[in-house]
Length: 312
Image 1: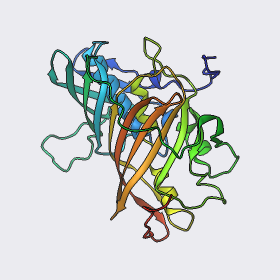
Image 2 (image 1 turned 180 degrees about the vertical axis):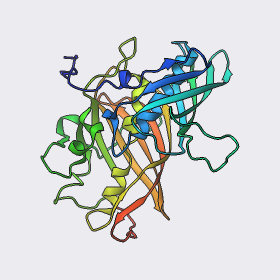
Image 3 (image 1 turned 120 degrees about the vertical axis):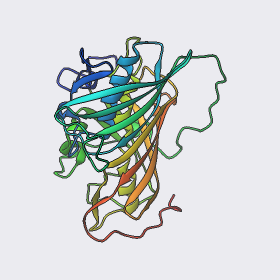
């Protein structure tokens, strides 16, 4: 058991599942075999982003250089299988290092002469920084409308269509609803284009100093379509939303396990949507921020026209 009572032995360890091994014959190349523990229909875009960040962190090899930001373009879907990451150093200064990572399936390689080749996997650029002296400014308040952790609603209800039991990734996370209702239930009603959940890894993710592993944040941030579900509300329209890109910024550390992921969809239009997420710990510390573009693939029903901008 960890300090907050989570039994971790029965659950997947993100750090172990995304660990990389250097290729002795190719400088800057790393291998990782991602299991299916972090799947929706395919692996979470945040989880494969973590694989690429592991390669970047290992390539840099400097513990004082810490993950600060990254932007990922998902070029083609990646499966839970053997992957290859190629890391290129873009810049390394006294306080900052920037790298590019290309992550793909091990059994495929893009053709550099073919611009239509779709075997590229993902492309990531990341910045790692050393702590420096500077101002400490808090610019936004803790979200007002969310339920505190003690009052948040459990997600376990036995419903066959509950994503928290259907998808493997949620078996590795404990979740509680902080804003919005269970969108898979008959009682679900439409609301503002916001959704918030308290989340924690069932197998705690820690760095060498006992802080939350910053590289464990992208899978939590990559949970933004729920806010669009709430805005649309119940009805015949069904969709899924693969990631086109995902950007993550990390601004502080925490030793807490429970994190609030508060999502807002800014706009959905013409088959794609943009959203962002704030991440706070359960002591009110702002930890990270993410932004995402999603491709909206309709499964059934007619896409609705909705203005949720004035809903409280």
